[in-house]
Image (cartoon, rainbow, N blue to C red):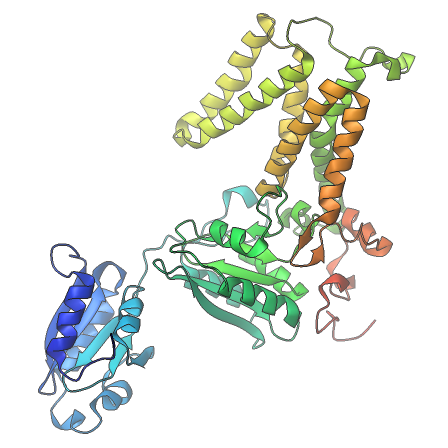
Length: 488
């Protein structure tokens, strides 16, 4: 059945009423019939997505039109001379018009005309930009992305006033028709990476994307069972802008306050904006503290567990390592139970009102933990090392990476507890193979470690001063490799 706009307005109205079930079953979709220059007309819009002040002004302008003004080429005259609004466009298909209206714009149909007019008067419910909770810094901008895509793009454009900045819009989801933006620097980004992102987004085939960026990530990364994240999430526009000038691609999904950065390596997920808001020496110190904490959170418990279970590996000066009191529960199972308990407290604090969250943490950490030690369920060392690991987990900039580390930590604890040294070595080899074979949009996940690049690897541990960052990352194969106007 053809959905081309009919010349008779009554047929168009009948189609809209049937398709959208207007009335009591869709009270928020408004169909308003008016007269424009002696012609019957109708306006269709969603009440909650419409800017009422702009809509009233446009309706007043339409009602003031005389018959002579639109006697010839009425739609063209309305677009160019009457409607006092910049964002207008013609539409010839009713289904396309309905899809646009449900996204926010207003539709104007004239009797006797087979072309409608879309007027972008949308105004989405939105909160003001605030600093993200998990990416806080001590000094710097306090704005963050929100759930409205247009606002998020504006925050990036405010930081990059370059005509080479490109923002392509695509849609995904047959029912949700979710807006997705691909943002990149045209003269910097690798065209192959941009084309790959564009192609994978076009291949998304699902009815709806209510979970926004997470659903999109699963479609475009194609790594369902790999716990390590191959995209980086950020809620900070300054972080997103910095990656754009390096040559990365940003994916913004409407209704999400997080944007995706692709491609990335493991070491991108270990960086934090705080390091770049400090003096290079201070930034290096902060980076080292964070890296050491993350490393210890990953290997501290398995190594201690091995040494406590096999004292023969210890020199005489370290014979004190190990639990002083014996329990009926194996040490490695105590660690597993302690980590489950820690995750339960974390999840409970998420679902607890903020005023009580701190109290809940104290109850979990002090009361339950102390009683567990007193009754002999845990040894004190188990709580000590679990607490140290928790510090490393919460110091990981990427929440997705921290959860992957926790999953593999539990695997290492079980393998070490059951198989001792062979289990620890086998687990570490398995994890390394997983990292070495992982790729982010075709690029090595462990670069510059694999393939080796000693000079770049040095700057993983040392925060390089911005004025001497002459070149963009080689592995991105950017079109423009120089960051300075003078080649050094």
